[in-house]
Length: 249
Image (cartoon, rainbow, N blue to C red):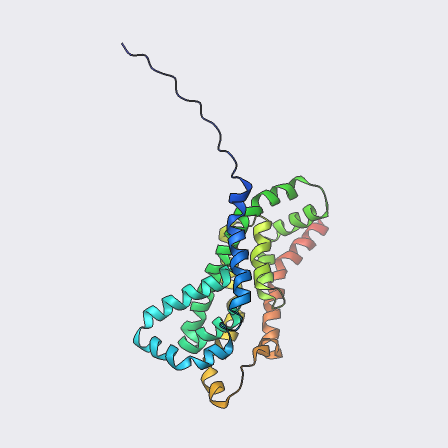
């Protein structure tokens, strides 16, 4: 007769060590610094102009592969905060026209943003959010205000041209924004700006022929900036309505 040994006690999952949590952010930071030192002159408008014939030839012969390579390169640029994101957006328009170039640009930028968002949340985001929630200071009150208006605020930081893209990727991670909400607002929120710059890239052929540089300040032209600001006001509308309702209760 055999005796049954008691099951081993179940121990709770141990928290990940600090070095493991910070490893993804450390890799991103290291690659970003290395890229800033070595790729500034490579991922540039001059490089696109000098290699335009080879890029067009490769696209014409291997369209699917060119799309895949372009999206992968763009994702890496965003995920590692490398220089050249604007040039990559122009390249998407130059190679693939405004559409589907804008779709490729938005997809790649969103995937790269999700990658850096997950790295930041893995490293610091969840624990930082817990500490903020447990506190009673001003930062905690700001976070609670943002939590009550997450959709509107996430759309706003994507639509406002003055908010750096990497800041809009990191801040939601540190405030424990759900991944689904971050991904949706990123994809939809960057569409207006992406379409503008992709359309500029689609017209680069004529710019190259004239020996000029593209006008990247076009997004601040009134006929483009005003509709974007209108979208910003639309994103803030729920916040205003919630504030009004809170005062009337």
